[in-house]
Image (cartoon, rainbow, N blue to C red; front, side, top):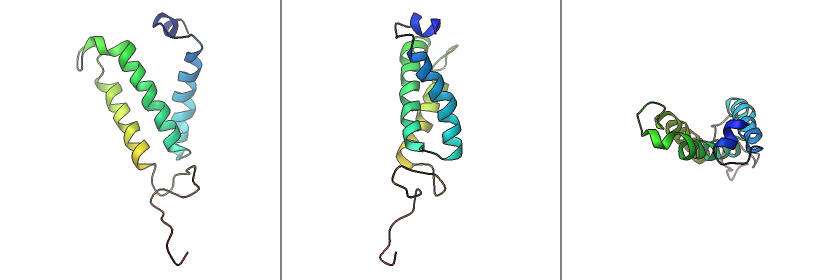
Length: 102
């Protein structure tokens, strides 16, 4: 909490960050609410790049190359969902389409 506060963010946001990384990671692996947690994770990585890593450059020591890759993966999951076995808000698995026969 002290580190988050030292970045100029409210300290209570540390709980959201921890929850996103722990529960969101488990949910993404299990395919539960993939788009929701991917959006939360992409936002979190954007803040991490902006507040912590940007001053070190792309590939410098503690640079933003890895957080940017994680944000890109989260953005891809946000756009394409978790695949045919993922549980989604709409109730359909990714890639499942309604046909005329049912």
